[in-house]
Image (cartoon, rainbow, N blue to C red):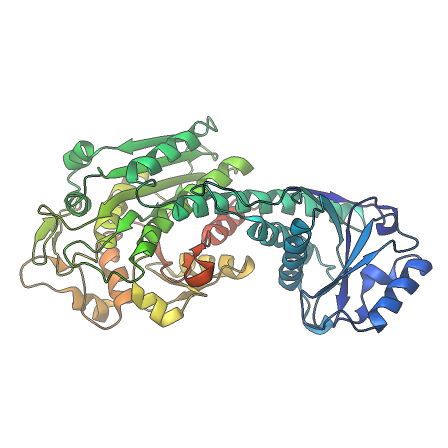
Length: 499
């Protein structure tokens, strides 16, 4: 959808639908208080009938409102005025977008309530509106023979500001929101594709197509022979059970100064995870196509960097493989040697994500990074600990961890930091190798991070466990596109462009 910001008065706006906010389903807010008297009278009379519910996101459609040029007026309940903020405006507006997209409305206009009055809130409101709207408009039907899409979809949304300064803030926010939403869409599309289509080679080809979008972005993919020469024994041990060759995808975005140290994003790219010899239960195993959501989020973030032409250097690394049972697959008790030279006893072949990540994290050293962040659907234990709302965060640098926590809070893509110390690291001790790939029943998310931490001692590092937040199950099954918003908010703040 196309997004605009203007300073036109609501009553002078020609549109198929003008969206006006109402508090508690009955209290006209500033959006209505500033309308001509005839329009106010008509709207207040409609509200007195009580057809608009108090709960946020309730709607009431009015037609031919006197004093307004709009064909329709959609009254949108914003909930309690006292707790109203930019996040709640975005959430409520998303419901309005969903409704209008289904009833052949081609364009709409939203009068931003004057209750959103600070510059930072104005930026957040506009940015979050785009992300929320695009979430409602997202459809994945690439694999369906019949496309069930609206014949006349909503194509344009205009936000009305009260003054030029607000309009300029909104324009910037709309641009950022659109790029983040597009990055999320790419991440969701890749994750929602089945494993027989989205293979490691498919991911590598997608990265190469992305690399052709900008001269600032270089995309390469290492073959298994190249990885073997580098000594990536941990990564290659996982791919042995698959007919699909593994790939190490590298995206180098050079938008900053030549000598500026890059932020490196490392995303787990398991395009399908059956667990290997330690095979998973058959129930819901189809969802293991989502084990590459970390890698998909890296591709989505790099696309957003290109779209925004960010003045920062960012490297994306996606180790990609399948994990399947086969005569040549890893066996419990096998010992492999990582690129870093550390030997690993594989006690559970379903703890494969850390095996492909550890070699990618060692590879990241060559870029002399300012910071490295890995993103992975790594442990079911993280779902037990934090559910499906919050991403797990661990790392070796307090400042980097705080930066990510704040970024998540700013853009409503929350994370929560878990402890990580030597007591947990001892759970990985092995009698036969330098370390084991699992640490027993307790603290699975933490011991997984401790494993990765053994390969990140030469730089500042953070780990995002997105096992609970990367996709939804049940009737709403599908990828979420997280944590693209968190990553982009951090990058935007690093180059002083957020807010």
